[in-house]
Image (cartoon, rainbow, N blue to C red; front, side, top):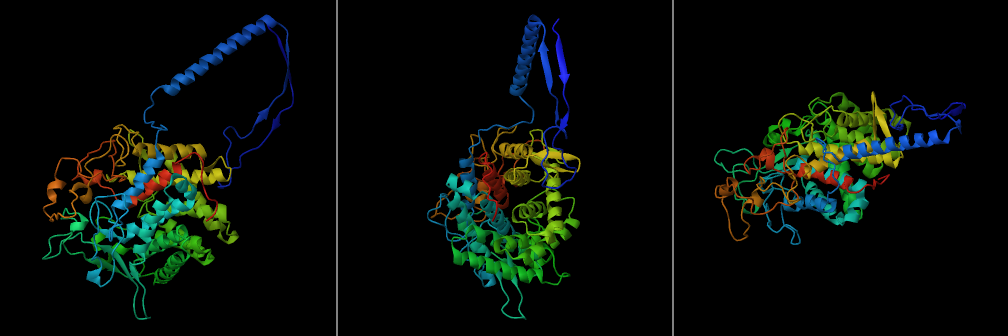
Amino acid sequence: MATFELEKLPLTYTHSLSDSSSAYQPFPSHSHYQKYYHYNLVITDKDQFRNFLLVSLTIILAIIALVLILHFLPHKNKHQGTSINFKLAINHALTFYDAQKSGHYPKNSPVKFRGDSGLGDGKSADTDLVGGFYDSGNNIKFTFTTAYTTTLLSWSVMEYHSKYADLGELQHVRDIIRWGSDYLLKVFILPTSSKSNLTIYSQVGNTISDKGEPKNDISCWQRPEDMDYARPVSICDSSASDLGGEIVAALSASSMVLKNDTEYSMKLVKAAETLHKLVTSEDPKKQGTYTMVDACGKQARDFYKSSSYKDELAWGGTWLFLATGNLTYLDYATETFKSAKNNESDFDNGTFDWNNKLNALAVLLTRIRYFRDPGGLYEHALRLSSNSTHSLMCSLLFNDFSRTPGGLIIMKDDNGPLLEYAATASFLSKLYSDYLHHLKFSGAKCKSNVFSVAMLREFASSQVNYILGQNPLKMSYLVGYGDKFPVHVHHRSASIPWDDKKHYSCDGGKKWLNSKDPNLQVLVGAMVGGPDMHDGFIDQRNNSRFTEPNIASNAGLVAALIALSDNSCGLKDSF
């Protein structure tokens, strides 16, 4: 028998993990203490030792074979392929915005089934509201979602500027942001005296039939180029706090993206500062959501009913601080963020969309804590933001939310579209993993759980992979991407024949709404509503729950795609 003589030497301990939940603490991938022993080994029987080595080698090879078998077996709910063509997907997702442009249509647009439209927008209110984006498959322009879209796209550029440049899409996304910010400069009129009021235009288009005018943007199935019905304008004042705050955020964020045009960038900042002052100085008793007042938001309630306003005010203040460096705006933002967190509803918990900015705001304020370090006066509020960010990451990773059988996260169980929330969750988790990676942290913790950079990236990838076709139906929900995608998209321009000399009436277009044939034009880059909670999908044009895209949802997908577009973080540590 082989004999081994062992001499055990002293035990030593190395690094331990603090119990603090601070964002600055990485965590090791093993136990709290690393233990080291040193042995002196003497071999007394060489034959037995050779047998020992042979048996050990056989066991090791068997373990390796088992691991390989398990690795290559099919895994339920696992769609983590690496075949995503991010360059193509990002180009497609941005091209959707070219199809949604209203106003004088650019001659060099890649979308050839669109033309000039909405050239009389604003006339009913004696103002100029030409331009902007049609919101979805209809011909309505909502200021709220236009501002949100402009903000989110701008954020993605500020974080991943070099990635856009490397993919050849930087000018493309800048053009889209400029188109949005040009329109947003038109949607509010500043008071000209102490007796006049701020005016904000919240919507162009009609969702409700008026007496004597049965035709509107919902009842008619017409290309925007053919619109021949009334286009009323919804009008708000400074009490529309959420709407004002979102416009401030959009103008501030886009001013940084477009800073190469110094004069225009300064114009955006000045407008944002003036608007911020007006909406934040409003009597707190009058502050509220824009859909509370009939003249301002009645038309929008069935589409974009806002549930809060303090998150937008804090969101706007944060972006204005980033654009100007003025700590007064950070003061306002952090105080308002704390107040908004205290009033956060369970229904919106964990989500980031056009309606709820709190989770995105927590991540953005955490960025300021990590990379701007504004000082001890802000530490309490910024620690709240980083703790909130860690709670969000844990809720995404550790089953606080259900999944479809195919692995898509279900962040709201109201039977509404799922993809918009999955896309923004993917963006925030990948973005935060890049923050940690940039700081050389391996991960962080929240109460009873710890998470790693790799875990965040795996989750982020899983959601985008699902959207792009790695799901039970093998269906890409990004139109034009992959071999199988929706062909009956709920969209007027894409479904009606394109002929700039042929006019189709309000009712005349409905033959294409109800047609079972595929759309005549491919709406490249549109992310549709997507599957239900059981991975089911109905590709029908008249079922908008499944097949209608919108500009706000697409912004989340663009942000997630650019964040995931390569293995490096590609992050700017300051802006």
